[in-house]
Image (cartoon, rainbow, N blue to C red; front, side, top):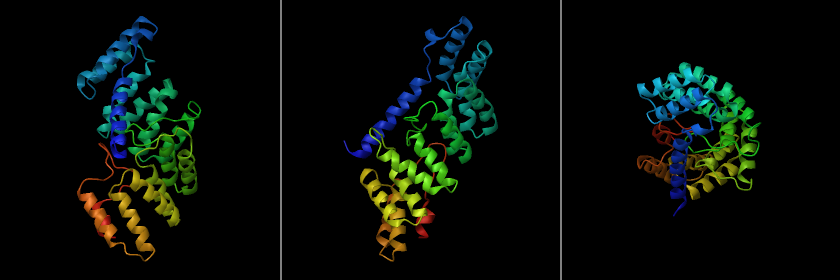
Length: 265
């Protein structure tokens, strides 16, 4: 099994895990109303996005107003449909009831969907109080949430802080790399003008999983250094056309590159 296949398998396992954790062990819930609310929640979770699901979450909340999972799962369809105002009301309630469980999800969504980088940093710094060793993974499985925090700092202009976070993670024993760690680190070094370090990470990314954006940045380094970059540019275009790009089902990756940018290099 090659490295890309391992990444893909990890992603599939994360999907299974995410779907599984939506279900709650209702026998562990105290109070008859809250047990019933939990059962309604589990039923509604299987139909997420449908009217019957949202109505199920509403009934669960009526029975047990402090059941945080119901607010969180009810919020998800609003996020996916772009109704961020409704999403925020519900997810804020879930976080207020159980910050340990829901801060990571809210921080990731602020980063990925709202581009609220300050808000993402605040949530993920707060999450560190509960999980000082490992913040866990982003909802799509691509990143450790500490890398999400680093990218947020990068977006806020704090490139050195972003580099420090990712570099520290990469040498941490037991750390499981995300799919794009070296690429994001390389781009941050590139933006600092540290082209040796940038290229070093783009090369490491190529060995683990290569894609058009990574090749594009390698060609940019070559062009800046007045070296032949056209072969890399053409490879980036070919790779882009083959569909090997940064993808997300609902939004766009941080530091994503589009074909037009490659063409104009």
